Image 1 (cartoon, rainbow, N blue to C red):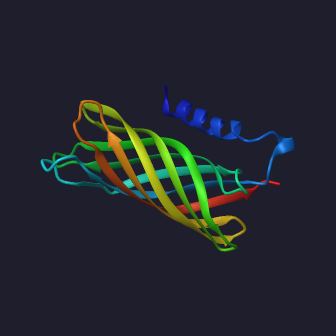
Image 2 (image 1 turned 45 degrees about the vertical axis):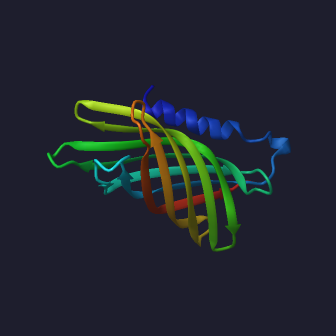
Image 3 (image 1 turned 90 degrees about the horizontal axis):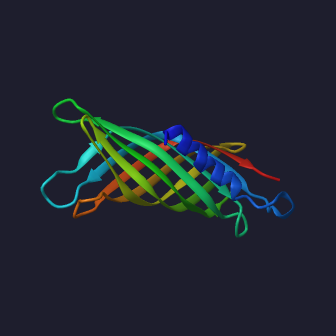
Length: 183
């Protein structure tokens, strides 16, 4: 399955979870896109921590349940780096789950999310995919009519098949966000 097909299926599932128009409570759609940096801590003491400086992520959510504070979320992203011999290494994450708005005011929204999906590590001649769980939290500072600046921190825990331990990734996200309130 291609990445474009996977992204289309995930976004379709967000729309499909919306209640029927007659029963729809007011909600909002938020989409954020930005730059990321990721630090990966491998299991055990043999390999040192690795930093992936170059990255991107897109995070989407549709908030409509429980007084318009909770709903489904999707997070897609990739981080890249060159290793010591000049080979390109990539970590891709594709996750879905739930997002909860903790506070909401005219100028600030804080949130937390719990996501599950997959992370794929790839370098020339090698590729592996593992199960990923990613709790995270962040804040949107609203600048003007639904346009915001977002800062977000995620802690991704990954279990690759055949590995004894778990990889722990810390990801920092900074970018822009747009929120559309549904009537």
